[in-house]
Length: 356
Ligand code: GLV
Ligand code: MG
Image 1 (cartoon, rainbow, N blue to C red):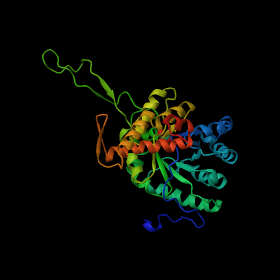
Image 2: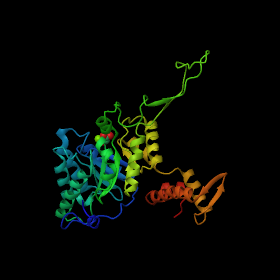
Image 3: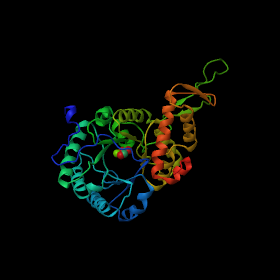
Image 4: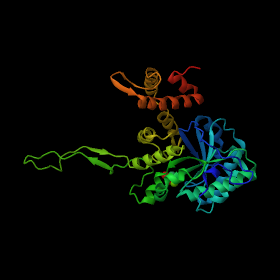
């Protein structure tokens, strides 16, 4: 165990100082693109200003025969595209694959100065983060980087979920976590074949009505209510992230055409505390933008509560509802997020009526 005094020391001579706090930047969607595809690469300069985070994916979804082309394509993008204030991330191959080490090495040495965050898939425990932490420090020192690259882990194995708190606290580089529902379902032997989202079989059913003789009529019509398969994991991930000052994200929603259910899944995650989700197709960018930007009516209500609460202590009645020291904090969360997002998005600022 590293003693607390050493936690924020660079792990290699000449590596940049670790950050003490994870900066909050608009992160409503992590938009994935396949860097091996030349047509997709050519679209990056147009897509970048429309998203909060653009991620070049080197891992699953890229065939083994394209792994090196994807890495080379990512490096080309990093060298040629100006990302402005959009974050530029990559998802490297997993640490147990034949490509993970070369991905990290080449990408950091070639374009480390342009990369904000490296996403590490299939993280199982703090030991995986320690490995990446030291390696990144060595590479940053070699590349002469003046700021550290942050690390985002995907939570997609049962062991990873069991170790989630330790993963979040394993390094000052830890920026956040994403739920990886596809790999996690497989690893847990859950019996859904969908990439994220709900399942019609995961439900609760209304009690049976009484039949004429008073016994329960179990075959009568009874309403059913589909439940969220991911509720437990997302809630656990949010607690672990917030306890460590890092950011939780929902991951992929595979049914690209079902933007309605995608919106529901994203909203569940938003309401539970996630800051964003992955977008796998341009259709999902707008969905994430809508869901992860606070609702203008909610912002207006929260602003009214904050104003009415004065110094933020005590209790008042507003529109027949009790507001107090705790509820004003809930309102402050909503307004703070709206303000942070508005700084980058003038249209959103106008929707909220924030002048300036
Ligand atoms: C994402 O990587 C997933 O496995 O769902
Ligand atoms: Mg996965």
